[in-house]
Amino acid sequence: MPRLRNTLSKEDCLALIATEDFKRKTVSFYRYVKIENLQALRDELYVEWDALGVLGRTYLASEGINAQISVPEPHWEEFVEKLYAHPEFKDIPFKVGLEQKESFWKLIVRLKKQIVADGLNENEYDWGNIGTHLDAENFNKEIEDGAVVVDMRNAYESRIGHFEGAICPDVDTFEEELPLVKEMLKDKKDQKILLYCTGGIRCEKASAYLKSHGFEDVNQLQGGIIQYAHDVRQKGLPNRFKGANYVFDERISERVSDDVLSECDQCDEKSDSFTNCANAMCNLLFIQCQNCKSKMENCCTPECQRIIHMSDSEQRALRKRQKSSTPTLYRKRVRPKLKDIDKVEPVFELK
Image (cartoon, rainbow, N blue to C red):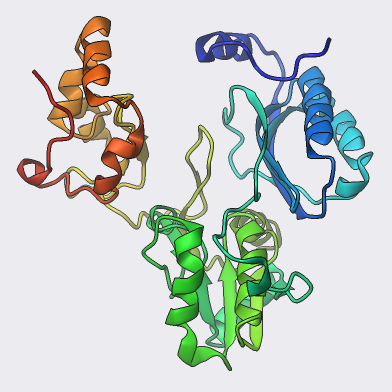
């Protein structure tokens, strides 16, 4: 019987990757398309990709597919052939990662209610009426002509990189962002609107949503920031995107320009290097410069630094007292003031 899910530990998976003598290609792709027999398709994709050594994360829903994966280069053509053999995904375009570093360590193909959670009712937008796709050259031209540019990503993404003059909503989820953007732009319904995101998937929904609410001239960056960065490099176009592009894998970000737009959350040093707190109970995502990374041992607070030096039994006892070992404990600290360490409210009951 074919394997339908990964059963190896992260350590075992990483050990296998370390023995590979070939290069990998990190790509992303999506398509909004009606899918009916989700479970059967999910299992087919997993079996096909697992046999080819594909790693990464893919979401399937009745509305389509959203994938970020790493494919062994020797199997790339076979992967494309098998993917295109599924009628739903014929000729689907790929966005190739800007930096081909180690990105994933296991294969996940998961069923979801939506490939991008939007919190909307089905009657709030019309899939047949999306925005106009603009390539890098035309996107630049519209920026220069004074169009309204809107970042459809989360605040932690736009914090380390965004287009010049873009509106960057202070939100943590796409679900929050849609109604907020509609309100922010309510006096600009007759102006040219430019939307962008990482690879384009969020802009598809956002453009349909805005057009369904009376916005007349809605446009979106074709292929998102990833394709834009490739195009400006290959065609010698001016780069209007400053900083780094946040990605949802082990790389965390890709460098698009040399500009560093943000600061370390623990000091005033310029940095756009994200860290997940080394305390697994915390796992807070924050920006940490190399000096603080060394001093704090990849932790966000002395509280977490103390926890990582506890014995396994002590950490288990702490998790039991907290009744949770998930990042939900720290959701009240999405934007922690780590520079003012004495003002950060303790989360764990250390004894």
